[in-house]
Image 1: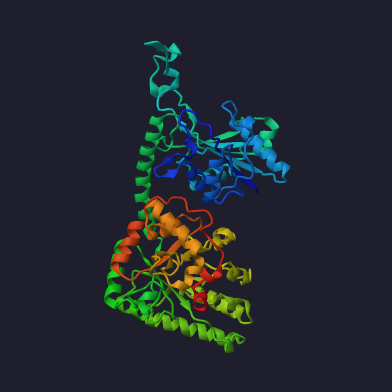
Image 2 (image 1 turned 90 degrees about the vertical axis):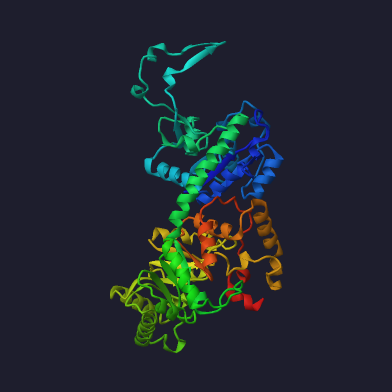
Length: 531
C-alpha cells in the first residue's frame, strides 16, 4: 500500500511571522513533523509543500523531499489545506506517481510522534474509514458559551443555560496536528472530512494551537511537562530491554576500550548494579575469551544468558552426524563454564554456514536442543542484511542479533526489521556505539577513519548543536527504531553502566539527513583491519 506524507508549510504566516521555521525548544518546529513522518516507517514519500526557499532548503536538510514548489495560487491567505493537498497529489500523478493513502501533517505540530502516526494508520486500515484524525475534547460545554458585545456578555443558546455541565454531550475539535485520508475519496467527494471519519482522542496536554505568542509559550510548557513525564516512563521501561554485552568480561575488546579485560571484581559490581536496575540479560560467546567462565564463577542464577557457537570446522560440515555431535559438545562446554543446566538463548556466530551442505544438520540440531529444553530460544548473529538474505527461508529463528546505530540503518532500510517482527522474531541490536568509535573524540579516533571525515563532521556538529552526549544520542536512537526488541551494550565499569541507565530517558532531536551510510568498510568492524 503506497503512502505519502504531505507537510504543508507556506512561508507567509502573519500572526507569528516565520513560525514554520521558528525554534521550538531549540529546534526548528517543522523538524518535529518531518522526524515523526520519517521515523514512523509508514511512508513511501515524505514531502514538504512550500512556497518558501528557506523552508524548502531546511526541509531537505532534515530529510524530507521538496520536489516542486507550491503555486502562488495556493500560497495566499485564502488557500485551504484541501487545495494544497489536491495540488500536490495532482502534480505527483502528472509525474507518474499515485498513492493509496495520504497523510497531511501540519508543520507546527511538535506533539506529533511516529507512534501516533502508526496508531492512526492502523485505525485507518482496520476501520475502513475515509479519514482518521486526532481530536481533543472542549474543556467546557460549548452549548453554554457566551457572545460578547462590548463589555456585555450573554448566552448564545440560552436554552442550555440551566443545564448541568455533566448532563451535556461532550464536544470535540480537530487537534490540528495531522490526518490520514484516502486520495481517491478526496478526488471523488472533494471533501476531507466525510461521513466516514474516525477520531482518535488526545490529551489536552498534547494539543495546542499556535496562533499567538502566548500559544507558543504554552505549547513549550506543555511539551516540556509531557516530555519529562514520558522520559521517566521510557527510562523505566527501557532498562529491561538492555542486554549486558560480556565480551569485555573475558577479553580486551572494543576500539575505544582503554581498560582492557574487566577484572572479576568489577564484573561482579556491574552485574549487581544492572540487576538492581532491572536488567536481566547477558550476551556472551565461547569466542569471548574467559567470559563464560567468569560469569559462571560470579553466578547467573537470576540472569538470562545468551551465548554463541563458534564457527563449525569445515572438515565436518558435510557429515550431519559429526555436526550434531560437535554442536552438542560445544553446548555442554558452555553449560559447564556457565555452571548452568540450560541456556536462555543459543546463536550461530557464522550463519553463512546454514546455506552450505551441512546447513540442514545445523538447523535441525538447534531445534533439537530447544525441544530438549537445553536451550529456550535459538537465533543467529549477523553482520548485515546480506547474511539474512542467504539463510534458507525454511529456517526460522526466535531471535536475531545484528548491528544498528546512527550510521548503520541497513537492517531497517532493507525492510528486514519489519519482516522479522511480523514473523515473531525478536531483534537484538548490537554495535549501537560501533565498538565505541561513535563515542571517541577527533583526537582519540584512529587516523585510518579520516576518510569518512564528512560523516564525523556531521555527527560532531549534531552533538554540539543539540547539547546531548554521544551516549545519549546512540541509545535514544536505537530505542526509537521500530521493531528493535533489545539492545546490547558493552560495559567496562559501574560508572559506564550508570551513564547508560541515566541516558535512556530523554528527547532525541532529529538526526541529520544523510548521517546513515551504506559503506561496509566502516560499518562492519571485521573490515577495519584492512583500512
